[in-house]
Length: 627
Image: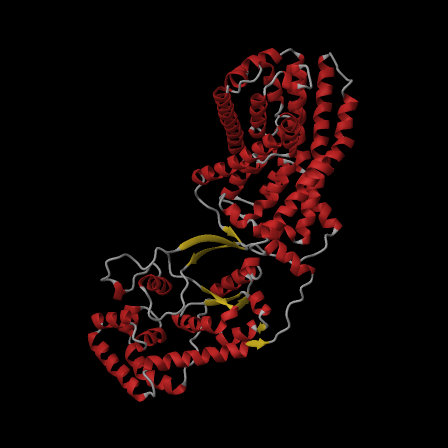
């Protein structure tokens, strides 16, 4: 019956309880009555319900504030419940939802007028687009801090006079302590013939119950219509007056300019994913077109310049390794990190990324994350290093750990380039799509496992939808620097150091030893030639090195002469999930700590071995069946 979640509101954390929709507090069924009992008592059983066999009314403490979601297109119908909620004696905030639909129908609703008349905050919202949601939570938090409960709206004078004798009887301290509800609410429920409250009054206060029923019958006779009908008519009249005062028909509709149509693209429940896919396509264009061109003009030329240098001395090898490490650093930063980070920061400043985060929030919740991590996952398509930096800056606790572990399985530009180069040439489009599809399935499956390993869900985030704005150069450059500086302070030493270690291993002829040590992985489990052990190991520096060293190890650029289609597929799957690179590990050390960074490496190796090994044996079995 109850859905509960934690939500961060600024520096505060709130628990949100989602209750079933109530049309009224009258004539409630058992499920709706349970919701009313929660609003009244929470987990604190009142004395009048001590005889009931079940436990407390709800497993949660009574609410500090009630947030009623009102449909702005059907204001009168929902305001009747608002008048009843005012009798509960708890702080109340009204979310005036579907304001866009009300405007489309020519209705202009004055939320401030309605707020003054009701005596509670009224916040206009468009929930499907995230508009007004931060203001709603801020108003609820401020209402709790003030701790002031609203007063019920006054009834018609003759009706209030008819109910006065009931107030006099039910206002006694004994009844107040037994029911623990405001006397206005108790009088209204008994006056309208609520069986639950009448039965409890009879059981615990039989003498007062008999007197109350006589007074209720007298009010029935004194009024033109039965008391229940008079109460309903009075409430309906007050609601109609409120709605008429707050609503101005024929209001000016919102101009459908470019801002409106952009919101239709990114925030509309049906089209939001289309807008997200458009941005995803733009990121892919930057990664696989613009970045490739920049790479060809920068790091590729540096590699070409350094390739003739083949030192034989130990110090020469160290110098070449340092150069290779710095060239690898340039190859990560210049073509992939800077353009992609600049693009995403521009999209954030314009206001588009917040809308994408809102649109994909539901999908990311299925992974145990919030939509706010959509930006790091997009960054991961270019390079996992800035993606991890973004996760470290925007998340904390469990979500930081889970997002960091998952983002390393997002195929970065280096891994994607290898997949496109080899699978595109030897396996065709079907092979490329299959590898990327398996990557998506593995990420989704790991997300479900991580939800079990880290079951404690972090608080939800209020997705604030900022207004559209033009990017400003100084904040743009400052934010880009903040997101890329880790590559200089954290990654560079490990990248250069790792390059030196691997260069020395190669210089002293450790290739055969390493290939022999890796034989259980390469030959026995993956079914690959033994000579591919070192290229796989060197992949921890940069994945492009793996591809280059494969050509060197096999002695040919036509690897289909030495590897079959099943072996190429297995090799590519292993590289897709194997440790992204030493740069990623370096940033992960800073983001989630040494222990979880080592766990991430172990997890990636285990997943790579499992997925690629299973694929190898499955493909071999299929080959035997087809032979």
